[in-house]
Image 1 (tube, helix red, strand yellow):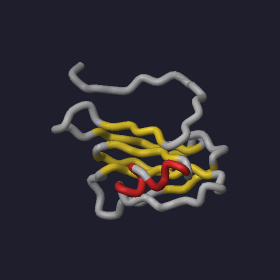
Image 2 (spheres, helix red, strand yellow):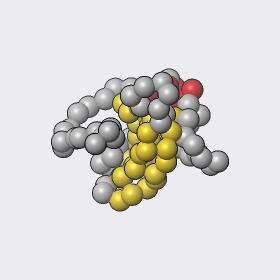
Image 3 (cartoon, rainbow, N blue to C red):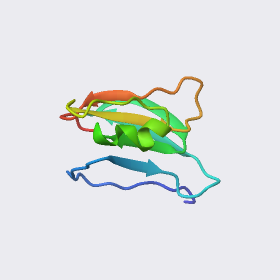
Image 4 (cartoon, one colour):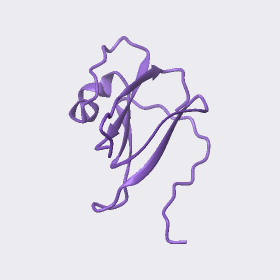
Length: 99
């Protein structure tokens, strides 16, 4: 098949600022399904997604239209990158959640 896909295994990693999942090439978009604790919370097509910590919320997340989060908050921010949608929204979830 000519379609691209991401194959993942279950890993637990720590991130200080953010994790970015993006498209493979400049002229491509990707379809994303975002799950939090195994529950589908969003799906969209676009350039990618940023998952940021409070420390990273003032970097790429902010440039992509996401919220600023105080550093003491125990949360993660999920922000679409250039989604093909009329109503893109960031989602703030607990740092204990699985994304």
